[in-house]
Length: 395
Image (tube, rainbow, N blue to C red; front, side, top):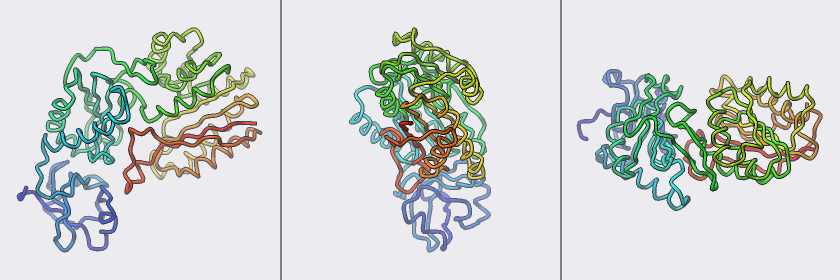
């Protein structure tokens, strides 16, 4: 460890690091010629301007987020044992919270593993790798993951758009086990089929688990519309809650096929229908047909992927709320999510309310929530507070 290169924080840029941030931006680090030649994801020591050591980090000289802190310890070896300790700590927490092995095991910086997401689907483990440091260290943490959980299958997902900002190519592969084995997730006693290799993210959205359950409580005796349904997390929860009918809309036929397979598994296929369409086109068509639903649910992908998208994205959420509210029956419920950390919670609420009003409707918020408990928040990283979930009772 004594031979590691050292990066120094500029004297007037130490505040965020001292407050516990796990990130250092490129403009916070003293420019040094030797740093430019470091390979992507190199392990470095971090020091303050006066030379006082701070800890160890992964360093990427070509990324805006140039350093990601791994540990405050200055002499620990960053190898399989280090990653096994971190993963074991994360596992112990999840085993307290869940009875079955279906959860997010590691949530990046919040679990002390910057750039690494690990979701567990019983005997299948899926790792989403978003940074050069974790990509470079993959042999070590894969060994630790295999040793700790002994899974039958490990899937490496390196296809998130953020990898391009790190200078990384797309890389998706099964590193252990049968590539074609069917994979399932269990949620509230219900079984879903998922695609951990070709599906969105890692194949399932564990962050919405509690919100799926809340939606189920509102569904009994209602016709339900699930827009951006993906694999049916919200729609099939509504079916389990006693919905009269559930229409699921998504642009991806593969996602709808998974939802349909899960509906068969759960014995609710007779009350479910599926429509491949753009969300706004589908809602416009349903409105012209005079359709109304007692429960409308919209869980879109991020409309705001960066700050430059904020103005247009907020308009998108308002437009979504206007279209969805127009399809919601009197005394019905509207559920809307936002998964962009760039959107402030109050701004999101304001835009959804504006859209509801533009549809000529009134209402009130009866529930607000965020991500599930297996998605912990890093207190010094606002980016980990990303999911907003609103439930409206409409007049």
